[in-house]
Length: 499
View (cartoon, rainbow, N blue to C red):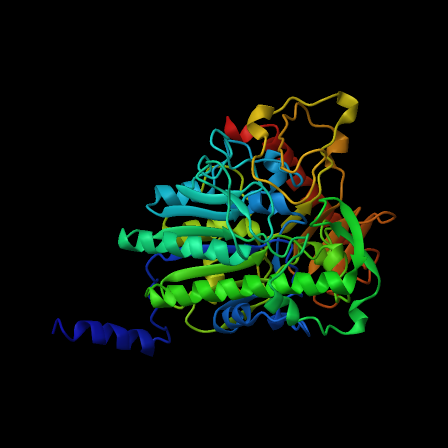
């Protein structure tokens, strides 16, 4: 009778119309991948007519393709967003070159405490990577790292665990992946689940590429040569103007090289017998920059709160947990990464305001709409009328060490800053900002000459028609919701989450 009991219970469940629940897979190994300045349209699977990204295309075809995935408008804020699950304005990472605050709890801290080995490879850009920095990858939860303060090109100079920077020869994306594979093999031998972050330097300008990759794009049509664009010179580190077609050949070569390194990583996981139980999550850190933008179905560029500034490629591959291909149009954002990974790893989320949600129901195919808002805000953090703000971290500890091609002021390295915010003023709530909930997106001060704009992204993804006057109630509701959220952010910025 005992042997028949499970069968009888299963039969009764099916007769009652209920399907047996799929057993949750064991907690996965986790790899986060991020391209630098890689916009939504710049992958083959999103219909780009020339770019070759076969391995990202395979991930999109076999896993979960996130068609409405968002990041912050620029780099450092998005990286802080991924690490903390919190909007970067909560801790003063307003723009590139602003660091995290040492009190922030990151996904690496949380997964490390849950038993994961934690490693970071590539671009960091939320503080110096050197030893002694209170915001280097080690201080932020990573046990091992090979990282750069900012972006890098071919033959990158990287710091291992905060040590003296060293030059590595070769294509930078492949170098990072090779190092990450070595790390993963080591952790596999130790029988430890791993959390590995690979943040590429590509395709951020200044551009360069292997000749074999450049050759793929030398026949770009003349329509890709509308004029000149401004970018950094690989020779001088200063701004120059170059024909856009030449620039795009190099940019596309970088994207293809990055894609190929992702293919190498996927093959390594398969060879090591880790593919089925490893979650691989790729996204961009912000939209396409002006030097890489030609024709587009979207509005804006990198740095703007319109779609081309914040909508990025997003795809998750995890055969054990996502056994069938899915395409989702549910709004998702980089701040969702921390709560989602914590749920999968059995880790607790920090007891501070978070701006992301757990996407495990989306991975399971059970989330059809988000329901909760996503907010974006380019904070005007400069306060010249109050004099120099008090540094949150000793400026000496904020000095970078890994060389850059780009000249930053008088130096070829990147220094960081983070400031105390002593009081909240009405003008602190200004700056381009947006709130997105389901199909509606409200934009305030998005561009010069605009005030309040409302778009239905389902009908108008290009944000061409402002329907604010037709829907005053929606404008009022979303404006209030956005302002209330800003109030919460300002409380965090004052340091009240740490008390």
